[in-house]
Image (cartoon, rainbow over all chains, first blue to last red; front, top):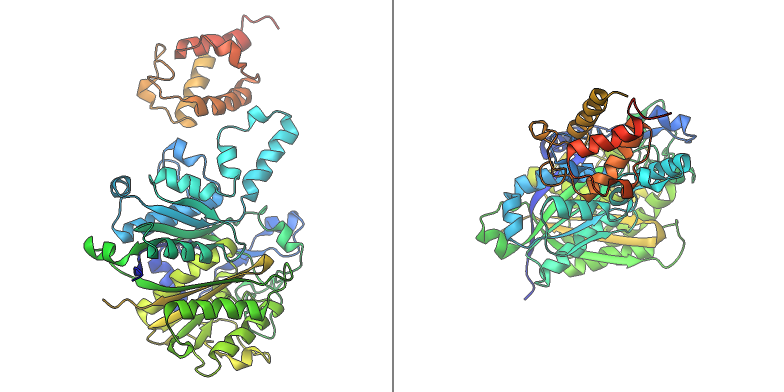
Length: 408
Length: 85
């Protein structure tokens, strides 16, 4: 029999809060974390809107050698992981003695690369880059740093799968534990928020330009939307074998019940309702659940007309009969990209724990597709026993996770 | 640049940027064994010296440098007041 996989630790560092407590409150109150970054205008961005994430100050907190390899997204991931370990009741001494893996989603380290390139262009001398540049610049920067800082000795790799990176990271951690290959895997996703990170995405004119009302700019499923808002931070979750968790007396937040994936095999940026459907159906089948069992769908919906439409079609196809509550927390956070698949599991588990569905804020006027969904436009008090969370990315990579309320 | 200025600048960046424990900074301190400066730290020290003293360390000229005093001697040989300009 397959092993059960549970979540025993969570940590979050985002534009709607820097702890589980802050984020839980923001979700319940429908608080937006979106603001204006004027530097982006000077850099030629079409849209200066972004999730506003405060950069942590780690000098004096973390030893220099452990600190200088961290790019911005790694600093966020470090902060999120501190909280995840604290809530898991695990310290570095425990990690040194008990093999723990890491799968973390990340798909860029633009600032580190561009700043290093700027130095070389000016000085014409790579020896003036310093020792941290290489460790900050690689796509695996988050996992190479966290594994060093926290003494992780199990499976160790970064998952780069565009805006589904964090979700696939959790899915793979779940599979490794279920297969008996690991007892503990730190999973998550990180996303840089600096001015360098999103220029090429802004180039696609995919971002909202509702600059006069940042908190109303992210409007997934709303007919009046004009694009997504980039955002970031980091989310960390400790996944653990159920028996292992019970034997050490860990607090169990929820159970990872199913993982589904697919690839559209089609357009590089246009999503596919077929691909989304396959991922969701796989996740449900893996969880041994019927669509009617699902109480809440945490949608990927980013506030782009095409993406929201395709997901609405897929959700309606699967859940049309039972019509569970649906919301996109990106209405508050913006699109946390590489981090989103992990952070949205934390957001959803916080809702499950506190029996509410966070609102899809700014959902005022449905279009013909979102009109078919049961979208929570306000906070709804609701017991959640089973939820499904979607994440989709460029290149047609799709991931869906099913999370079950923990029952011994 | 005077010897005092060189020593003060070196001490300052070792404490502030390399985060060496200030109480260990004495002239006879061994860079590696006493101050804990490893090969990656030296990569950063090359950058810091260039920024503070305006010259680039050549690794071959550092081959015999072991102590803080020798390190300051080396810098003085490059930018000290008695260096012919």
